[in-house]
Image (cartoon, rainbow, N blue to C red):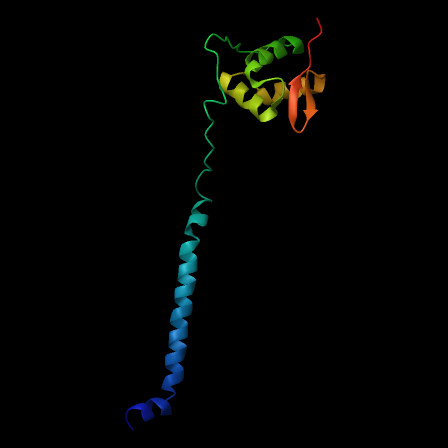
Length: 136
């Protein structure tokens, strides 16, 4: 027996269809795995930090930054208040922290937390903060 009858007799059409399905499924799985490579490499690489715009943080060149903040909270707050004048009356804590890091003040998280606990840095709502006027 030869030709199409032999293919029919040996289930050739079913094997050809199964082979085509196996190849297509394999290609689909392979393309899915290739598309996941950028997501997998993200686990091994460091996350990129968004760049800080220079217009957001301007440092006065004449500003003298102490190596250690004074122990008195009011004296320490005057250092922070002096370099945050350009942020305006109200500002975000993120802006305050970025400014403190850019200037090089030691331990900005701890200092900002101490100011908030002492009532020197108060919330004005909507995630904005302002300096409480210092008692003279």
